[in-house]
Image (cartoon, rainbow, N blue to C red):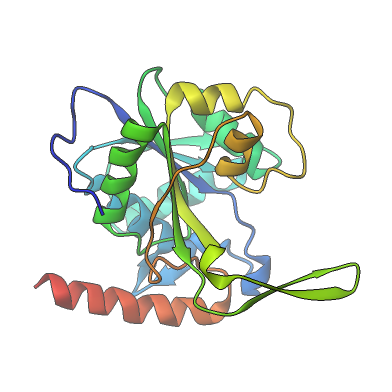
Length: 237
């Protein structure tokens, strides 16, 4: 990974944390970003990761309006005081990010992060900002460790594992580039920010992710994340 020579460089940075999940796959009535991880909500860890960044981004959390008060109550309960703005999400992830971009200044860097990736390291975040400043965008990804096959029209075909990357977040961009891309009308092919930017005619620059940068999706992921967090804290001592 690249090292940071001058993190600020007089350029402002933002982080849009998308917290619109419903929790359906977690079999939980509480959205997964609010589930407890070592006694605290998942979302708090994600916000903390960006608060530790050398770029000191302004943090914007995009959340369904039904949960704004609930989140404020959780912050009070856990004495969580890291500055961040809460805004309402849209019908899709695309529309939620678009709402967040309204608060992002021009000529800045902006990282878009899943609220339910609580173990993203500061090094990954800072490296993504640095590479986005250089290349226009930086999408965190890891190579597939497993053999890969595609299935199309009932026909299974092997793919080259070394050419397959598993995309993570943050996905980081120069703000002007991302804002312009989000002027496009929504379509179902927009699975993440990289796909929106790619559709607008830009090549995507991949930067190093981490296999431990997991997304909390299923119930067993909480237990895995708790173990990884304990390991992370032990290594920091």
